Length: 59
Image 1 (spheres, rainbow, N blue to C red):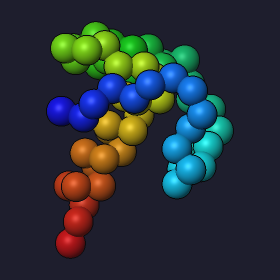
Image 2 (image 1 turned 180 degrees about the vertical axis):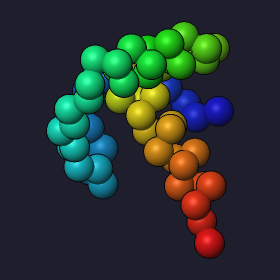
Image 3 (image 1 turned 135 degrees about the vertical axis):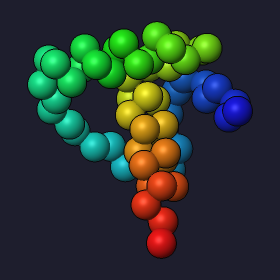
Image 4 (image 1 turned 90 degrees about the horizontal axis):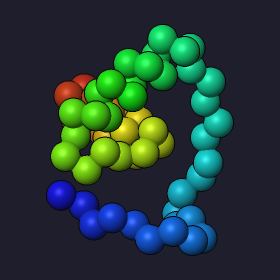
């Protein structure tokens, strides 16, 4: 499990991404977040989902 990052200035090697989601997708995301032991933030849950998807699509 990754260390929880501290609040403050974002890492230098990252870029912000603005994303709009339907209310239904946000509700589904929030329900999935509740299944995690550490209740990640929405952005963290999206990062985890993307990482999992990318791992599954590596060729």
